Image (cartoon, rainbow, N blue to C red; front, side):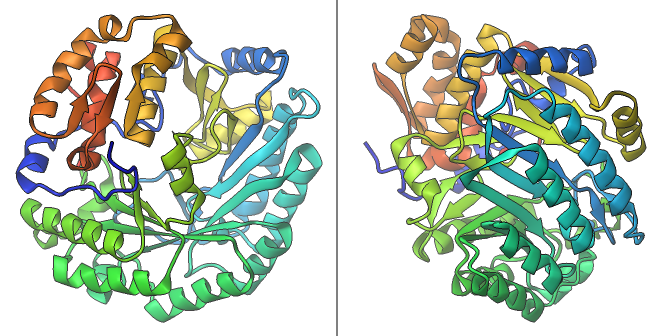
Length: 464
C-alpha cells in the first residue's frame, strides 16, 4: 500500500483524458439537487429530531459575513460589494436573531467544537461590530475549551484592532487570500495587494501566536505562466504557512458577470495551465508540504496530515477538516448547514435573508433530506476523497449490503481508470494510486447516483 502522504504523480496525457466537469463533493447530494420543497419548517423538524437523540453530536458553526469593499474579478462567491461599513451593524443584528432561533432549539450541553467566519471578508466589518458578534456567540453557545476557531482575513482590510480581537477571543486559525504576488496579475483581477503588506500581516499573526495560518492561491489567472507563478510559490514556501490551498480559476463570464472584465486573451492556455499546476504540485511537495487532496497542502506536522493517515479526515463546505461527526449550522446569508440527514441553505439575497429572519427567525429557502442510499453513497465518496482508500467490509457492516453487488455499475466504470493506473481494485478495497490523486473527483463520480441519472455533469467546474 502506498503511503497516504506520497505526492500525486503528474501525467499530462492522463489528466487531459479525464478533465471534464464534475462535483467537488463538499456535499452529497450536491447543491444543484437542493430544492425549495425542503423549507424552513422541514429544517426545524430535523433540528428537533437531532436534539432528541440520546447523545446529540457536537456543533460546528459557520458564519457568512458577505461584504467586500471592491470586486475581485475572479471571485465566484456570494458577496455584497459596498463601501458602507455601517451595513455590518444591521447585518450582525440579524445574525444574532438567527442565533437566537437556533440556540433556543438546542439541547443543553451541546458544545461547539468548530467555528468559522467566512466571507466576503469578515474584516470589512469594523472590529467593534465583530466584537459584538463574538460576545453574542459566547452568550448563546457553549464553546469547547479546545474548539477550532477560524476566520478569513483580507490583508488589505484587516486592522490591528481586528487582529487584537481575534487573538484575545482565542481564534486559532487564520486564513488569508493572496492569489498571486505578481503586480500585473493583481491589476488584471482588480486586487492590488502588495507583497510587503501581506508579509506584515502574516508576521503579525505569527507574533500573536495564531496556531495555524492558511493561505489561498489561484492558478489560471491572466498573465500567469509557470515561471511567473513559481516566484509566488517560492515566496509562499519561504513564508512557511501551515496550510496552502491552490484553487483552479474557473472562467465563467456567462454566469459571473464581473469576470467579463478579465481580458480573455491574457488567460494561460490549457496546456500552460497544466504546466502551472505541475509546477505547483512539484514545488510544494518537495518544499516541505504534504498533498492532502484536491487543491490542498499542509505541513507534515499538521493535524490534517495525521487525519489523512489514520483515515479520520473529512470534507464539508469549509473544505478539509478533522471535525467529522458534527452538526454544521450555516448562519448568515446563503450559508449552508449540514444537520442530521439534511442540507439546508439560507436565502441568497441579503434583503431576502433579513426579511426571513425578521419574520421567522430562520432563513432557509431550500435544501434536501437524505435517503438511506444518499447517506451510504456520501460515505463512500467521502472516504475516497479524503482517505484515498475505501475498505468494502466497513461499508458492508455499516449499511448491511454486499458492496460488489450494490456498486456493480460503479466498479465496472472504474475498470478503465484502473487500466490507466489511477486506482487499484482489490477484493477487499479500492485504493487510489498517486497517479489518480489529482483526479480523485473522477474516481468518486461513478458512485454518484444523481450523475448516473443525469448522464453528465454540465453544471460543475472541470475536475482539473
